[in-house]
Length: 468
Image (tube, rainbow, N blue to C red):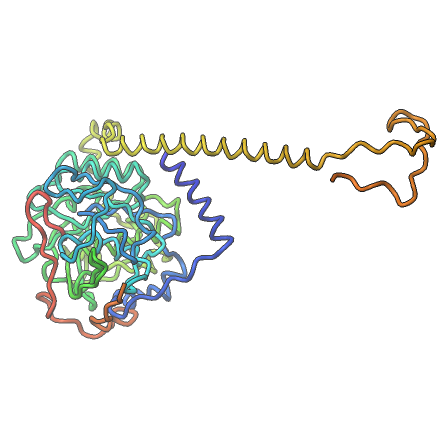
């Protein structure tokens, strides 16, 4: 149902853009250094900007009312309703706040798809849509299923939990559900590389693309997790962010940002090649990286830092390695019964309510459509009656009488002159580092060990799990 309605919306959007082309996407702020490092404007946006793809952001809510995200956020869900993490409302959107931690979901959404309004902050996939699903480690499985059922093609989880340790069965089965529905699942590797370096969920779930963080010199961020599940890396050190009050905060770091930027690249790929399966999207991301961190594949940066232009266009052999899906395939082989039943799990209550809302919307559309059609029919009938030909006038008094048309005989000549007519908010200053030139050869970044003069995201503890 949702996809059917989405198809109608996409068709309408196509018609509108054909009639009135959208304005060009504005360029990034000078402190969004990853745009130069990735040559986004020169090599990426001419190929794809993410149109037609929805990225689900499983986080602590998104403020879709700030200028940068207006028109970007589609209805989502608040799965934390009634808990101490409740953000209010039911659609996954939260109110304005200057708190860095509470702005986490908004910051991730802006990295992916901000439109360049307000502060001028723009996402790497500015034509993609964001679905906010407010959730935490106790309901990530339900959040994943909700996002899949509502049409997301990429799921971004810039969160991680050391409390879970291994990937829990319910969470792993939800990931299985997403992959079998052809959805890419991306999660942060974790921010405790120098703090015990625990294995983090959902990054350690089979089939999840786990992302580490690097700086503008392709050096591994000091606190990025060192784990065998790390598949790739992306910019995450000194990456500024948009707060939920629409202001910019500088010098924040984490695998959260790296994950969001990777999700943006996945959205670009799925927009360019809608028929490309999730397995191939992940394979291309892994096999078009540039080495980063220690030489060769390593546990901080995986195969290396992702390069969007190459992920979009480079030649990748069909038999290229894909460790993420190899782990997933092995998990399926080891759990044959789960493979048979995972996709048959009943829908969550949130998904059921959303489906019911879709049904009501469909009924409204049908009723309104019927009224419009009937109205048009009545209108055209009235118009046609108004234009209906009057009967031809009779002959002048005293003149010959001709036969009616079609009855034979000869009508009198027309009268001279022919037949009678028929019918009767202020923008904050742009600061931060000047950014790296194309090829990641930018000005030397600050030494490893944390941002200078800034502050990293402090992952919240408790039932929500830390955010990367």
